[in-house]
Image (cartoon, rainbow, N blue to C red; front, top):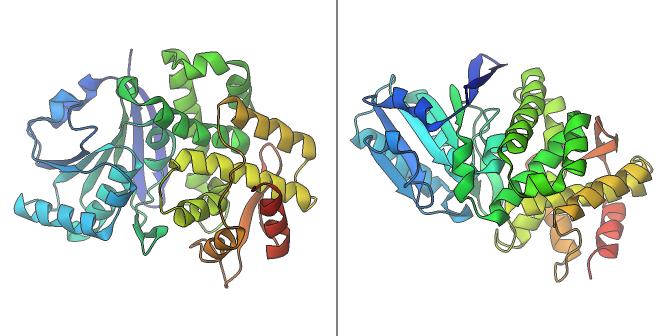
Length: 346
């Protein structure tokens, strides 16, 4: 398989997405670099094993300022200078934390991300958002710092647990809803092939999802307008993650649940087309996502949403859709949201 490239310009940064094989990594042999892995990814990608490395514990709790401090200390120990490279290999937690550290060290060193989960390939690695959780809130501390290179090696998905693979599919479905009707059709018609991780289909999902996000971010790098559409479902999802202490739900599962709540709230507000809401919600169900939950306090979810970092002037703004590709930001009354959530929590 030959290498496939997608080039983007995010603000003053150039970012290249390469989809290819492990052979792409031979270029890093002998470079002045530190590789950041987690315990699940440190055995992958042999060409990088000769480089100095940091191996982090897996999981959302690693996404903290303590981890960033640990990485900065290691960069200093290795004598990294401004022309050195930080290479992050892993999912969203590793990519986000390592990218934040790279953006801070000497005010920014070269960053290469090698996402190993579908979620990171189609979302977390692209677009320059770095971040860690703080005081129980998701991604509260971060910077905008795009990777110079994002290298996607699809073979790494072969060892990914099915639950984590499905977590990434939630963001793929979101991409289809935001800007790729053909991707939505593929997801609807090829459920068995997608679930079986057929190589050609998966590569198509990745490239199409990256193209949707890349186009949106190019128009609005620092999230002053259209980039906020990428947060479809995330206000609900981040609230759910905060209330549950980041346990019991993968990020993608929370996003899937959150998008369904956004569709329901949009429908209740007379914004979202009911047929579209039903079709999109059913697609999430086809892939096994939970659209209803129990034992969660609605008031706790509302409170967490009111503290969301995307709010402006103390007002909660929700990403809603009228129909496929027609997305907007709207304020909704807490009474409407509470009513919708109450009807769908038992």
